[in-house]
Every structure is written in C-alpha cells, then in structure tokens.
Length: 199
Length: 195
Image (tube, each protein chain N blue to C red):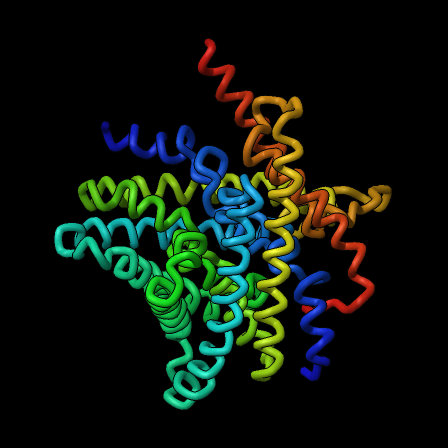
C-alpha cells in the first residue's frame, strides 16, 4: 500500500468509530460543544501519531509478553504532554474536558492502531496511519458535535446562528442524544458505503 | 465537598451512572453484551476491580503523589496500579478457585483497558472525594455499570429475533437501546445529582 492509501484507509474505509466501534466513550462525552470536540480530536491525533511512531520505532525491542504495558506507558507519556499543554494554554477547555483528556490513554483506538498496525510497519507509515485514524475520529466528533450544539444551544462554535425563535432542545445537551446521534451516523455511513460498493 | 456517603452511592448507581451519563466503559459494554451470563461475569469483575482500585489509587494519590509533588504523573501511576491489581487478581483467582477463574478470568485482561475504571479514579481526584466517599463512589459506579450491561444484554436477547435494518444491526441498535435506557435513567435525577 502507498502512503496515501494507508491514510485514506484508516481515515474513511476502516474508520475507527463507525467501522471498528472503537473509542466510543469520548466520542459521546465531549460532543455537546464543537470547541471541546475540536480540541479533543486534535489531542487524539497528536497522541495517535506520536505513540504509533514511537511504538513502531521500538517494535523489535518490545518483549511480546509485556507489550501491552509498554504500549500503555508510551501512550500515557504523550497524553501527559497533551494534558499539561491544555492546562497551560487552554485552561477553560481543559476544565470542561475534565477527566476525558486522561482517558485518551484507555481510548481503544490508540491501542487498536498500535497493536494492529504499528507493531508490524515502519515508523513513518505508522505515523501516517495514526494521523489518518485520529483525523477520522476527530471528523466523527465534529459531525456529532455540530448537530448537538446547533440544536441544543442554537450556536456554531459559540456564535449564535439560530435566533430567538428557536426553542432549544435540551435533550441534545444531555447524554441520551449522544447515543442516538452516533447510531444515526453509523446507519447513514453504512448506507453510503453500501451504495458505493454497488456502483 | 460534603456529600452524604449513602446519597453519593445511590447517585453513582442511578443519576450519574458511569456508563449512561458519563459514557465510560462503552467498548466492552458493546462487545460483551450478547449474553446475560457473560455480561454478568464481566459486570462483577468490573465492580470488584473498580471498588478496590479506587481505594488503592486514593492512597497512592494522597500519600505518594501529593507529598512527592509528582501529581502530573497520575495517569501513568493509576494505570500501573490498575494493571498490576488486575494481574494479581487473575493469579489469585486462578490458584484459589479454578471454577471462578474460568467464568471470570477471561474478562480480567479486558478490564485493564476499560476506561470506566481509570475514569472513576480520575473523577475521585477532580471532585476531591474523601476516602469513604471514594469507596462509595467506586462501588456505586461498579454496580451502576453492572446494571447497565445486564439490562442491555437482556434487551438484546429479546431483540435478536426481530427485524432490524441492516445498517443498525449490532452496535447501532445497541446504541439506540442505550439511549432509551439513558432517557429512562434521567427519571431518577430527582434523588441527587453529582457533578
């Protein structure tokens, strides 16, 4: 596979959220506002790219029996960097995201890509794969967050678009809507991909 | 923050259910909920590990990390504590009760990467719980998780035979069921809400 194919594949065809059902936790939790989702998405892209790169560099030295532990430690170090960065430069968003920044560690997407791709491929390809998977994840977050913020607050990145006439759907801000939105998105993507296959 | 321990315990089960309102532990929740037996096994394992690791992490955080001023290492330390505890439990169960090991053992490795476990420890730190509160919160969250996965497994067994659009089979349908469950749990929110 060429580098471009790797990228497209992990971004769209094998998208972590809708194809492999990984990393759902944070995809649901932070998506009531676009800004939070954007920051979270970028944090995951950063962590994925660098942890896949590092794990792939070390892949011949990591003993098979404790590889999970080593992978988790590598991922955790990058997550700490993200966390400290957010605390220093974006304290408001860091507070809003709360424990979910730390929970990037247990985001199954990262472990999944490390295990499935980075352990078998060269560092550069692994980093590209990581960026693809991370962007795919961020993309899903932004789609869900767009609808939840629009209907829930009537805003787009904090700017009021829907006027006073709009009755805010408070359900969109609460937990259940996240489940419904993600299910609808999966359904939609399934049908689009099915149609593409038929053509 | 002074919160009655019992109220905190009940709130962790119902109003602020770790899965239905905080979305933690979704991965294993979606993949293991095909049968009631296996979800019961995983649920109990999560409950046990969550209660114990929250207590352990409380001591590690307030008696090691805070005095040494290395709080920023909390993620690494917490995950090591959880992984070590899971490994230890696995070995102990294997020695003491092979029957329990065969029904519970296969779920233990899954638990290390269950974000609900790490999430409870992080919530404990962010919300400044005391030791008793942390244990109550950990146990309550574990029971809440068990309740949610059991309910989903039960519903999924019933829904299995019905017609479902192809795109929604599997995860999609589970998410919709979970959404409706979460709506139902909002009805409990009169008890107490913990932030």
